[in-house]
Length: 107
Image (cartoon, rainbow, N blue to C red; front, side):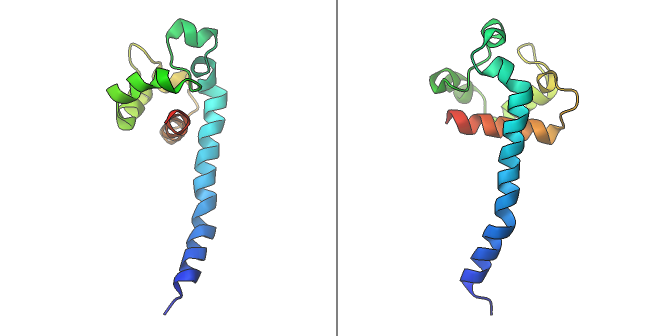
């Protein structure tokens, strides 16, 4: 029989790097692709993109759309948002991680 402590330590050691890497990947894609519009700069002002530094501004988007719906909008594009934010080299997984990262900043 395995000790619960050994199992917990194993889980922490094995899965923590995966979780950290996903967060880092979201942060990297955000910085390279999304930050131009989602950090309150000129492009964000022109496009009306919500600023991740303003939780109040995100309230209406979070109330209107679930995280899954936001992911679909960004992955497929809409009248308000370019497909994948205009990033042709981003995978769907990159975009989904980035949206999760952005939502973690505003909740």
